[in-house]
Length: 226
Image (cartoon, rainbow, N blue to C red; front, side, top):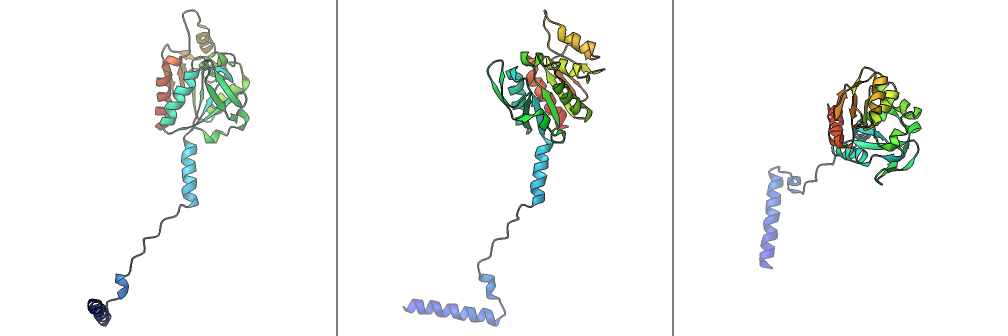
């Protein structure tokens, strides 16, 4: 009890002394933490704009697209920070020639060009059946005429040729010893064929098949990152 009395007395004397000498006792009170900065609507809009600036549209045949041309290039671009939307001739689950599934969640008539930096047409036997598809032709031309990147792999460069956007452009396409028909399609529509895995001519990127898909994906990444 004696010690507690002495301790209380000392505190009172110290407190009176601080007041006497003009020292504010508030200096010894616990300090509040600084207010946190709230996220403004402008911040949210800026983040949304950044995301939109990095969106890519991938177009596949609804049946028998070439699996690795879709999945490998998609993975490369997603790892680089791009957001991918997939479209086809109709909405639903598109099936690859090897059984892979791609969800075509946006219809071609719903596409807003302002949301995308590029469109990629994947190949495969299914796309070989779509080379005269006027809806795909219009999609390619719309991106091209709006100064967007247009990319195609395997047989899909023949679609770009038939859409009329490869005239006087360097490009490559799938071929074999027994089938040069897709090269002929390019040349008949004014393209300058090059026997290379990947060819870049300004904002048009073409590749000759699944063996070139990694180089194809990286070429798209590099062009869109510059």
